[in-house]
View 1 (cartoon, rainbow, N blue to C red):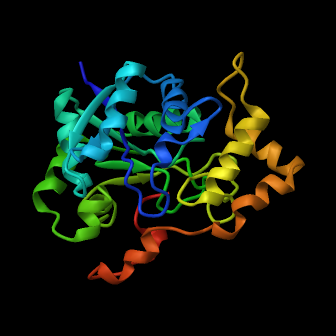
View 2: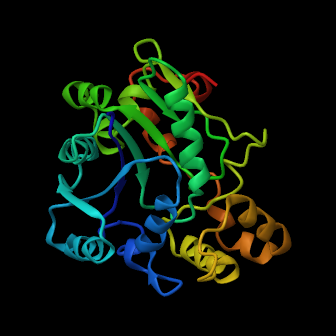
Length: 267
C-alpha cells in the first residue's frame, strides 16, 4: 500500500521573526495550532515535522513529543535534503510539502490538492502555487518521492535546495506538473496574506484566532476567515502592507531562464 507523508518544515531560527513557530496562539504554540489544522484533513497520511539539527530547535522536538507527532532532524539550510530524508524515515511513496508559516491553512486545501494528485495519473508534481490563486498561506505541494529524490540528486542552485520543489515545477518540459486553482474562480493570492513572516502577520493571525477559534469548534474554514475579513477591515489591515510579498520574485535573478509564472504548471 502506498504511503503518503505530510512534511511540515519548522525551525526557530527565522531571520525575519525568530521563534515564530513557538509564539502563543489560543493558548498553545503556533506550530501546535497549525498541526491541529493539518491533522483535520480527511485524506490518510503520515505526519512528520522536519526541523534542523541545530541545538536551538530542541524546543520543536520537545513540542512534537508532547503532541505525539513524529519529528525528523535534518540539514539546517538544505530543505530539499531534509524533505527527502524525512520522507525516507517513514518509507513514504508520496510527499506533501507544507511550510510551518501557514498556520491558517484550511484542511480542505490539503484534501483538494491531494485529491487532484491521486486522480491524475503520471504526475511528477501537483500544487496550488504556480500560478497561485489561493490566499497566501494555503501552500500545498505534492510529489512522488522518486521525483523529489531525482531533484535531490540533480539540483545545484541555492534556491532549488532552499525551497525544495523549484527543480520540478520550473521544468514543465521535463516533469508533468499540475496546478490546482482555487475552485471559487477568484484570485486572492496577491491581496490576502495568511502566512507569517513579520510581527504584523502574527498580529493578523492572532486576531483571526481570537475571533474564530473555540474549543468546541477549533477548525474554522478559509471561508470563515474571508467572511471575518469582510466584516472586520481592521483585521484585514493588520498585515496588508505585506500582501503579495513572495520569495519567488527574490530568486528570479538566480534562474538561467525566466519564464512567466503562468507557464510553469498546467492550470
